[in-house]
Length: 384
Image (cartoon, rainbow, N blue to C red; front, side, top):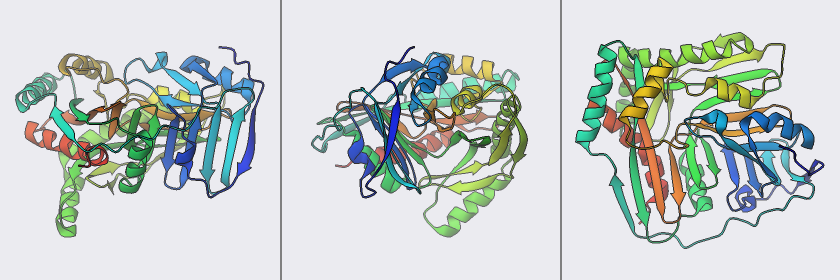
C-alpha cells in the first residue's frame, strides 16, 4: 500500500523517560532487559508482503511491528506506528512520521480485585487428545506435535496492558516482554534476530519444571540433559531451524544445547548464528516467516503436525505461538515466538500454553508442563 507521510524523523530524548509512559492505546511494546521499543498511533496497516516497500518510503528508522497469527502468517497485518520510542545502550530516541496522528497514552483503569479462572478443557479431554497424538506417532504419521490448552479469566474491571507489562518485566527476567494491542506476554524464545548481515536464532524445546531447592533444581536439570525424550524433541527443532536458514544464510554455527532457567521452567536451548548470503534482500520479517512454525510450537513433519493440531485442539490459537516482533527500514529486527501470553479483552483474558507430544509422552506430565507455563501470566493477571 502507499503511505502518504513523507518521512520518519528521529531525535534524541531525555533518558529518564519510562518507556511505558509512551505506550499508546493499542500500541506495541517490546522489552528485552534494558532495551525497549514502545509505539503509539498508526500511520498504516500493511500486509506482510508489503512491509519492505512501505518502510522504504519512510526511511531506515521506521518500523513495522505486531503479532502475526499462528496460522496463515503470510496473510497477517502489521502496524507502521506514527511514533516509536527506543531505549538502548545508545540512549533514548523517538521517531515520528510526518503528518501521522500520535495516539494518546494507554488509559489507566482500576486494578481488578475479584477473579474467576476456568480451564476450558478438563483432564479427560486432554488425555484423549494426547492419546490420539501418540497413536499418530506410533503409526509414524508424526514424530512430534505440540498440543495447547486454554484457560479463561474473568475480572471485576478491565485489565490494564501497561500494568500487566510492568509486572511481567519485574517477574520474567530473561524473556522478551511484549504487547501488540491487547495481546501481551513474556516469551523466552527468540525466533530470529537480524542485525546487518548477522542472524541469530535461539530455539527452545525440552522442558522441566523448576524445583523448590537449588539441589532439587540441579537434579531435575541433570535429568533433562540426559533425557532421551527431551533431547529428541529438542533436536527436531534445531534441525528444522538450521534447514530453514540454509535457504538464505551461510556460515551457520550451532552451539551445543544448554539449559536456561526461567521462573517456572527450565528449557533446553540452542544458540544458532549465521550470516546472510548474497542475493535478494532478506529482512528479519522474511526470516521469521520462513522459520515459522518451528517444531517447538507445531511439530514434525510440519504439514502432518499442523493437520493434527487443527483436528485435536478445540479452539483457534489466534496469535498464540505465532511470530511477534518488529522490523525496521534497514531490514533489521527481532521476532520471538509468542508464548506465555494472554489475549486481553476488557475484563476477560484468554491464556494458552502447550506441550510437545513425542514418543514416550505421559498425559499427566504434559498437563503439569502446561501448568508451569501458564503460571507466569496467571501471576501477572490474578492479584486478589
